[in-house]
Image (cartoon, rainbow, N blue to C red; front, side, top):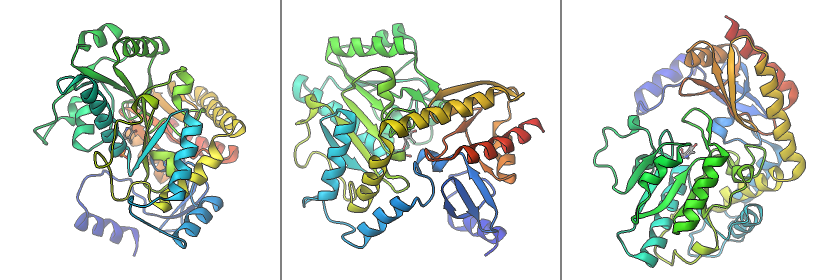
Amino acid sequence: MNFEEIKADENEYLMHTYGRFNAALVSGKGAIAVDVNGKEYIDFTSGIGVNSLGYCDDGWVRAVTEQAGTIQHMSNLYYSPVQIKAAKKLCQLSGMDKVLFCNSGAEANECAIKLARKYSFDKYGKERNRIITLVNSFHGRTLAALTATGQEAFHNYFFPFNEGFEYAEANNIDDVKTHVSDDVCGIFIELIQGEGGVMPLEPEFVKELTDICAEKDILLLVDEVQTGVSRTGRFLCCENYGIKPDIITLAKGLGGGIPIGACLCNEKLSDVFTPGTHGTTFGGNPIVCAAANEVLSRVADEEFLSEVTKKGDYIREKLAAFPNVRETRGMGMMIGIVTEKDNAKEVAAKCVENGLLILTAKNLLRLLPPLTITYEEIDKGLEILKSVMEE
Ligand SMILES: *Cc1c(COP(=O)(O)O)cnc(C)c1O
């Protein structure tokens, strides 16, 4: 099939939920993707922060295929050594106490919301159930996660939305305080709002939030679905802020390209869920956990992490010299680019034509390269980006 035929079939058989770029990708290696015509692209997206080790990394392929040929799935009614190994590693790396595995970021956040509410229900009764999230946040597409998402544009069509969410302005502690009442059980934040335009929270604001939470036994929930698993140069972005939340959610980069999400909690919450109170058929399936074990064994040592930081700094430095770049935001290899012209979508489409995959967020260009990208690939990609931006 040629590209036009693929595009026609997509239009005919898939629901029209995505504005797609003009490329049908069929294979890849490292930070290079290949389309149906054999054209190569430098990948500055890693999916959307998913392929943390790049395309078809040798160790990752081995881990996944070996697991597929050993035992691919079992129900969560049995003990799964590969799942337990992943949970243990996650606890060691994060300093958290327990893990629940699920299949996506939205699901991890649903779990976080349920966990926070049940903690509060058990201790204070059912009225104390409200969760404060931040304006301009993004927490996923399922109904509660969508309601938690603090952007009006997402609160449409699908009425009724869930009750029990309030939205406070990011970096405005006084606004948060106006929402803090006896009914609040949790404050749910992204440390760097990714889809919202790569907006890092101010450290002082985050510290004040943690103080409010500690004082009132309000749980702090941090959505690290995009920032987690070494994306920002630490295993968790929480480490950049020096905070220890009660609940952390992970997904995107955790499986290196297959669907896994995780909700992590501290000791205070470790006995809140009991058999039957939460679960999922596929969550923590052996194949996804084998993939996660490979990712976790690779991305968390000091040398790897400092490379992520260095590569991020290298990209930022080069971008600063681009004529049409006003500002870059983010940490590590989570990079937002504010351009002089308000044309991020056009630039991204042009980049694809010229052999570079790149993301946008709001009116920014956004880079989430595979963490293993080489300097040579970075240089090549930036050259394409520069020439497109200069057009
Ligand atoms: C992508 C994302 C989600 C949703 O994850 P899905 O796997 O698409 O459900 C939630 N929170 C943040 C911060 C994200 O970036």
